[in-house]
Amino acid sequence: MSLKKYIDLTTRMVRYNLKIIFAGKFFWFLLAAFLFFAFFMFQQAWNRAEINEGSIYNLLLFPCLLLIFYPVVFGIQNDEDNRILEIIFGIPNYRYKVWGVRMLMIYVANYLILLLFAYVARLMLYPVNIAEMAFQLLFPMLFFGNMAFLFSTITRSGNGTAVIMIVFGLAFFIFMNANRQLAHSYWNIFLNPFSIPSNIHPMIWQNTILKSRLFLLIGAIVWLLIGFLNLQKREKFV
Image 1: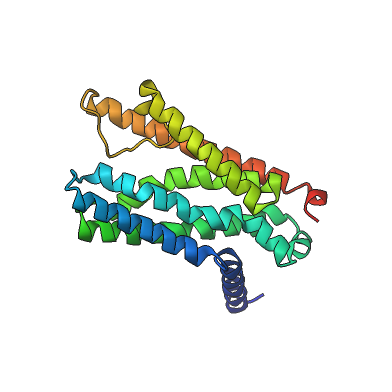
Image 2: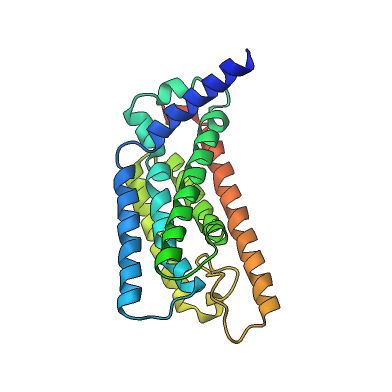
């Protein structure tokens, strides 16, 4: 196969998968994420609250998780609804060639959207480093996104996975806020790397952030690998 044909085939495959991933309800999730972000920004400005990098991170965290919600949670169900699940399971190493590429495209697209949101926050509220802000938000996105992918391979239902993820998300949030010892620990999934506690040395805080990001990254890899292993059980899906 010539290089030109290979590039053309790859382009067509990317376009086709993007249509599947971001079709249907994704536009409404994107709109909801932006509206929530805009509302939170307006509320901060109206209340004349202190605005810094830490508050911008908190403003972007919920829209960040909302962006990843639909394409990952409803991905397998969309394949089943479009009656292409049986076809793509005929591809050797389906879990790597199809969903591996899809997950990569999902995160790249959502990262670019986060860059745009961070740029809006920079213009409207506070001069943040948009690349660093989006990069830090990528870790909880990977953690929860791959966890949602894992549960979607178990339930094979978008609605079922959505319920599980909402319950887990609320449980994590309540538990972390209730436990003061974990609030600034690297075990805190919602740790804000831009909100430096006054009673912690900056070097210790940097070490905590590094451990937190490693913890989220390792967790994301584990969820993804287990999800890929679940896709080996073809009889569960077709």
